[in-house]
Image 1: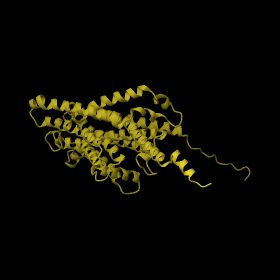
Image 2 (image 1 turned 90 degrees about the vertical axis):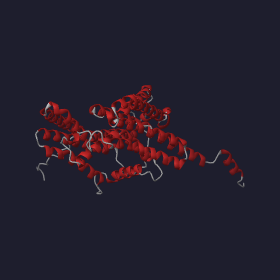
Image 3 (image 1 turned 60 degrees about the vertical axis):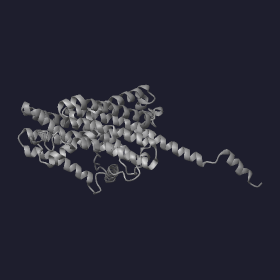
Image 4 (image 1 turned 30 degrees about the horizontal axis):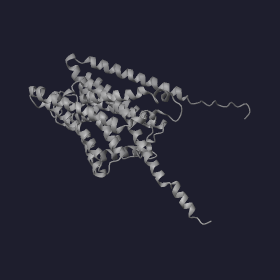
Length: 422
């Protein structure tokens, strides 16, 4: 009707504004967690503060590392999406697979939930609410386990099913080994310390030792001398070892046996380290420690050689960064010799420091071990680029060969044309 006022349509905020607003909220949340956590730690007496931090760190550091690995995997997928590597075919994924944005969304929730629970644990414990503090990690672990195993169509059911099915195939290699099987198993070897800490945490929860001093005794069922520690550390390597034997059974390729030998070199590193708690100190210093050091050197150098010689193809080392559209990252990374030297050097150094993480007798330096485990995640992160690209190149080369073999040669075409009646 003439003269009637039309209500103004309020537009949605711009994506840039929303992104900045989320960053501000994230920084504010991080500041609050750090402030509350620091004040809670300072309330503890100086003689109990280190043990208090060690226990809190044990429950939450494996989940923080899982969040870090999830963030890095999202970056891997983003790079693959920008380049010519078809990771969907490499991993035989369904069309409903998670994109890098969905991976980052999951990592964001983990990054928010885990430190929040840790801050609540620190605050409640330092203020005398021990039973409420003890419930925090238990509740967090239970919620994450329910989400992972939930059969309902929520929280990316198809992707969770794919992940759990691949884990089952890793634990029971009764079928032919596929690329996703041994790829995920390789990543699990980088997360063996994470699995070990998860086992220690669950052990204390089951035995009701959370927020108590019972676990301080090294000889307790959940103490630092437990035989479960080296058993869990070695499990990913044994899974990968049996995968290689299964591959040899199916293919009869001797390289599978050499690969199995590589994973077996981690076994003495882990168990010689664990022996420190079960032999006399002079025996450890004079006999077992030199063996442990020698085993660590062999494992590091053998693994480094295998990365360079077998898992990667150095002739195409930086092509992964040749994006389909112009990008700053392409100009910075593609065809640059410094990337070549960085990958080789960092892989060698971090392969050697990885021995430190596999050694249970050094685990009391929890901040150092956490840093080394995080660095191993970064090493595996850059390993993923070249391992997946190498597999994609093998697949395309095989397809091109099959196509060329199916096409008739020039001589065949001439013979075929001469047989025609004119």
